Length: 68
Image (cartoon, rainbow, N blue to C red):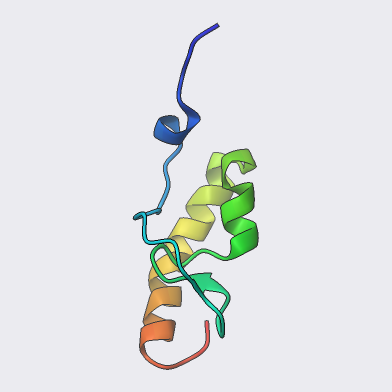
């Protein structure tokens, strides 16, 4: 059995700035919700890609004063 580190084999938007914005419930660093972060390693590649495609809009809405 191979000793593959799952953290390096799964694409992630994590930027090691883990701080949850209470009003939006999203991480200020990556833009994911706590449930998304918790499930990330168990999601399919398609599920992760769908969320990653949403992240720029989430961040823009949060920075623009709107709610995600």
